[in-house]
Image 1 (cartoon, one colour):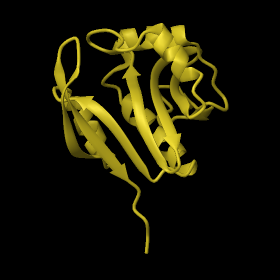
Image 2 (image 1 turned 135 degrees about the horizontal axis):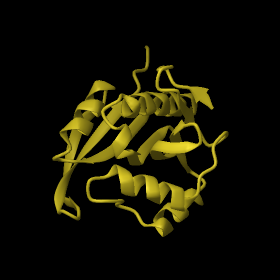
Image 3 (image 1 turned 60 degrees about the vertical axis):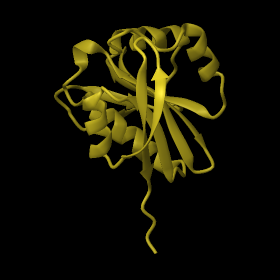
Image 4 (image 1 turned 180 degrees about the vertical axis):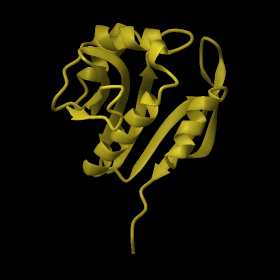
Length: 162
């Protein structure tokens, strides 16, 4: 695991090579992170963990998972599938640190383009994504359930020097 920038929080970011996680741990973390509970079931997380192109970056405090990002990566393109920080750790910069670390990791793996969907009402997440360079490129009507809501599709493009 590599230490996160903020020493005072003593948070570490772990990637697939150094982290093991179960579908139940991911579900529990997601259940605590989202206002309406986890959008995925334990079984959905298990299927994702078994997918060769999928991975998870974890924010850890001691042995506790306090945040996670699920992603899929293939041929230079990545998608963030899940992203959450436990409620008691929100608004402390952990999501920003985790997202920057995940983006750097994916770039090292050859990622040149990244996509994600975010609830249209989730202004804090949209601001965070814009802060790291994602732009809004599309809207998926009625994409989310519980409650029904549009998804904003956001994209990051790695700048290639010519």
